[in-house]
Length: 338
Image 1 (cartoon, rainbow, N blue to C red):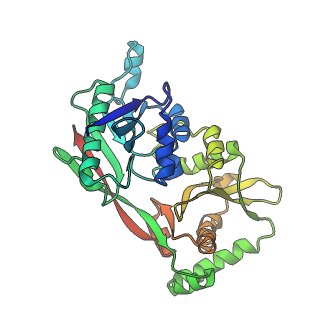
Image 2: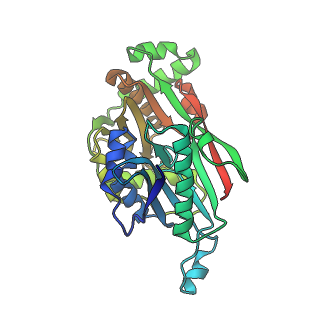
Image 3: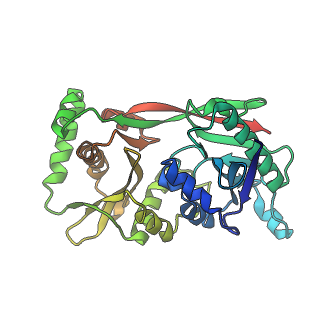
């Protein structure tokens, strides 16, 4: 049966109800929920498209895609002329957190159906954007997804890996005993320093002040990106919606007055524990460097106590995360013309 695409502009159209059904049924990361994607798209500087590929109608989806359309380097020129710029590239990835590729398939879809779904997605994007020779970029592709993306006239690029810690311990002490002695000594010292600080309050909570969390997450983002690439911060509404997700929790660090110094945003789903954000104050505003390192120990402890299969620490800071025993999972990008 032929595959068809349902294409949605998240700022103007409501995705079909089957989108969230697909996310729930196949245990996708909750960041795929339509409401979260629409909230993120609402604060983006680039337009986005949600595509659901179906077989025989909306009630039989086989794949979902999320893409954003990157415009020319000088979009203000088009605005002055009263025209919206056509995209120079469509990037398929999850947003606003680079936690995975922007495509997901039904588990029972065979490789041929999955590859066909990608082709139907690209055709739908071409019709929606009106661009014939459209450049496509797929990011955060795992080794399983890589063969499904067309590679003719395209370049494969190795990206920074996803750092993952597989759970094989029954206690934090057993975990620490597994680490190399150099790192074990350092981490025990950090753990003791934070645990005995009388001015610190550390809690695992179900909710957080959305405005404050958004600001601290933005401070961390600004430390790691080029200032030449402006991007608006995530709205408080996104953090409020994230906090409402089943399995979301926050590890918070506060001073004696209750002021939030740093936090980890976590998701527990499908037997995994996922670190989604780290937010912290700047040095001139009361930052404490030990908190960043302490959070990983507490997340490992939480993974063990929860019985999660693994802890996903995400991309970046590979050398630091490897000290905690995390291993790299390779990721690729495929970039080129359609």
